[in-house]
Amino acid sequence: MKVNEYLRKSMVHTLVVSFLLFVGIPSSYAENDNKGFYVGAGVGQADHKDNCEEVFGSSCDEEDLGWKVFAGYKFNKHFAVEGGSVDFGHADADIPFINVNTLEIVVATLETKVDGFFLSSIVEWPIGDKFSVLTKLGVIYWDIEFKGSDLPGAGELIGDEDENGTDYFFGLGAQYKITENFFLRAEWERFNNIGESKIDLSTDIDLISGGIVLQF
Image 1 (cartoon, helix red, strand yellow):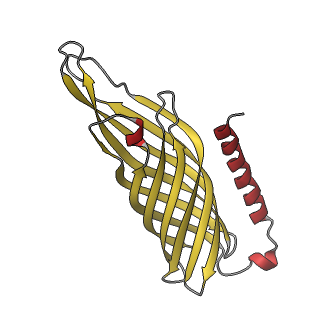
Image 2: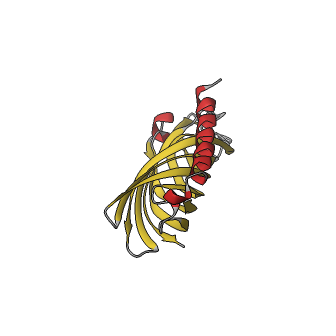
Image 3: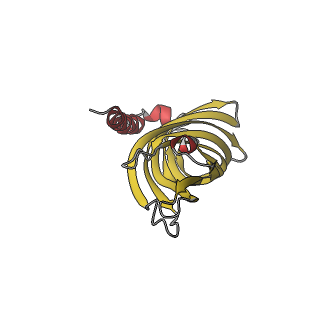
């Protein structure tokens, strides 16, 4: 079995087991004011870390605006499950080619755009009454789209590709309580092996974001 395939299945099993454990937590431990449903959103910077290493280009931009929306359920002050949608923006690389008709060097632009859906388990450690730190482990179903420019006289040097897959991610964060139902959250998340594709182009993506959480 391939390593990545094994990791994906392991992450899914971890999430399922975590969910069952959370549901089975004794009520005497879980009954507190912290449990309940919540929704949130975050925005920040997405860094497509390996894109410029995978292609030979005269210039490359690996960073773009990233954002996410999510919903979750807190079983108690320590454990939660969370799912949502994330958009990592796009990365661009200008790649020089030789026009076989004119023997001139021409430049094509390769754009990769990535988004996806995720599910994660969260472990949270309160520090005092208002501040807490959290860790997360989850899986993402990603979709990556490759777009290339057409060059006159040279034909289509880069085709359009669209593919998807599943991989794991993890993250660290901090949360601050403004009111009983309103929180500020800051996070760093690492999404692994996004786009390990038939065109042999993959990258890890870091998302650093700040956002809000509303608990019901």
